[in-house]
Image (cartoon, rainbow, N blue to C red; front, side):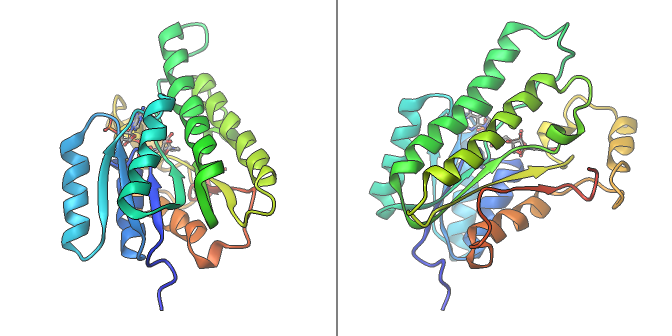
Amino acid sequence: MNENISKVAIVTGASRGIGAAVARRLARDGFTVVINYAGDVAAAEALARDIDASGGHALAAQADVSDPVAVRQLFDAAESAFGGVDVLVNNAGIMQLANLADADDAAFDRQIAVNLKGSFNTLREASTRLRAGGRIINFSSSVVGLLQPGYGIYAATKAAVEAMTSVLAKELRGRNITVNAVAPGPTATDLFLNGKSPELIDRLARLAPLERLGQPEDIADVVAFLAGADGGWVNGQVLRANGGII
Ligand SMILES: NC(=O)c1ccc[n+]([C@@H]2O[C@H](COP(=O)([O-])OP(=O)(O)OC[C@H]3O[C@@H](n4cnc5c(N)ncnc54)[C@H](OP(=O)(O)O)[C@@H]3O)[C@@H](O)[C@H]2O)c1
């Protein structure tokens, strides 16, 4: 018997990239999936149709995670469609690179709003609304360890997410809910590829001892482990999934 059947997972930022791969994988594992997106309704609805056509259950739900009211409505929508929420995958995120000397206020504010406040908004809802046995999987990044020039603001938002991960794991004592973070390395999605030359992509791909970029499915496998029965004893941890880059 598949213990995930009847469990409901919200995946933020699931219209493309890692989030879409996570939604597909969790649906394959038996979860009913809420595909959150910010702007790309067509991609999110196409993914939901695809999952339904493969025998799964999915709903596309718009919400900018930086907006606390929209996030509350996202959880409302999941509860009214499916009766409750068991898993939150806090995947939505943006990256705008610049050395600190050159970074503008708008880039700082937006990365804080989406990556940090967005994670806070969903964690606050999940803290009171996830059913017993639930799982929360946040998204950090291996740049928190690599700390290269240009990544200052982005890495700071992800370090903050790691801090909230450990704190919330303790705050949920007694609820039988785990809180962990996944910290991918370079992964072949728009977020990583856009704006980089083929030469730079090739150089970054070879940094890990496994000498390739991560694929969204590599990260989805790790999320599926933490969301499923096998990951049940892992709590308050950051799992770096990066081919060994750090
Ligand atoms: N790719 C990497 O190399 C890498 C490495 C380490 C960590 N990560 C982290 O992994 C996560 C996924 O990244 P990705 O590479 O898959 O990114 P991506 O390809 O750029 O996709 C981002 C997704 O997030 C959604 N999104 C953006 N802003 C949002 C908002 N305010 N509210 C709700 N959804 C929003 C987008 O939806 P719309 O299209 O609808 O706007 C899209 O579905 C992020 O947290 C990122 O920081 C990625």
